[in-house]
Image (cartoon, rainbow over all chains, first blue to last red; front, top):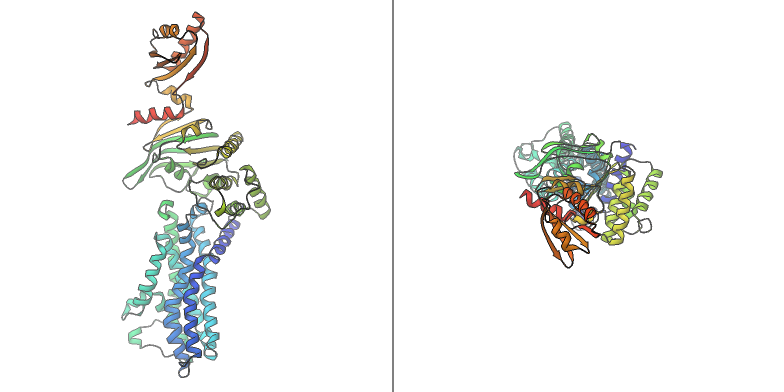
Length: 255
Length: 307
């Protein structure tokens, strides 16, 4: 009996269940919407004729994809990993096995990451490919920001999953209220949103290719370095807090 | 590995409500029945032992380890009172998956899964999806997943509910075999007759308090202040009644359809007196039965006395 083998089996179990869950289908809904939007913009009468890179980046990738679609897609997987087991009441079968609570949480995160990153970065690749030449530059410029933002959301939504009984609803409210509304509000309040740091990275990366950044007096950007570390910090700190909560929680509080 | 479960002055509060109150007992090898009405605290005790709940006061030890620890969970097989599974899996896949969370190598996993399914009599039906299994089959799969790592201590929360009589018999036989192998089995039920035939000893719980523990006979004999009803069938019931009523251990004697029903305050002394009497008087006893020494009757007495 080895704890590592048991942990890997839990990762595999969680991965398989997430992959074939209704959450995976839910993640595809906003992506399908994006695809339709992009096809219309790419091949319709309002194609990227002028300032193509700026319009593709600002009008689609930053304001729609990063700000709305990435949190929703990540939510579908991250909220389903522990939250799904809580809702199905199957978490008990895992918690009575000889695995430390923090290891269970880590296994759930490890199972979620490839799916969430695969779908957000994979969709970015598809959209950039469909956008043609302009998309090639966008892919290499923006993939680090999408990767790090997804990482931060995975951590955050796992924290919600262990902290709140109705974590999916809390995460959905968070995604719409904090990420969409507060993240675009004037003043420093926008810094509470993960997408603010993602956008900071995207503006910095896209500027040399023709992306027009927002007015710095309004946006008040950090340096890309600070934004990167902040996104990583979101991930790590969320997981540490989640592990501490999960370690102490009684099963009745988790159902 | 120690097959011993210890509740060391355990109290559990749910906010201001008390779930179990100062429970102090040890459960060793053999079958121990945990008896109590719904809401008495049986599930709380089992959840404390399986590390789902933490004791507010006192300690719960599984083989000497704190019940919350991973070391304790290695020693424990738990069959919950839940009817939820990974419904998309077959019974075999479910047990295999649960076994895999102990970190066994692949070949051993297969052997353990097959053995556990064989033991619960599900070897031929294990390829059926959980969603399509009957309640009885699901109960057996739940027991199989608790047995799969061959733990020294088993916690079974209402394992016989919904199982047909044939299934009950085979599960009972399995539990006897496991007890013979030295495993400590704590089995909870609110159906007292079920436990009566199964358990070596019982823990009776009411309103969160442990009100009695020991074999049923021990528990009954501890209740000296409560009368016990004994039915005697013989040819000379009237004569025997007249003789017995003189004994100070007899509270009343009644004749019912040719049988004598005697209410005694102290069963041990009564049986000694009866023995002496029938030998002296040459009365032939055809049948002797204690009518209210069953788990049900004892539990009702105890519950009333703790009110």
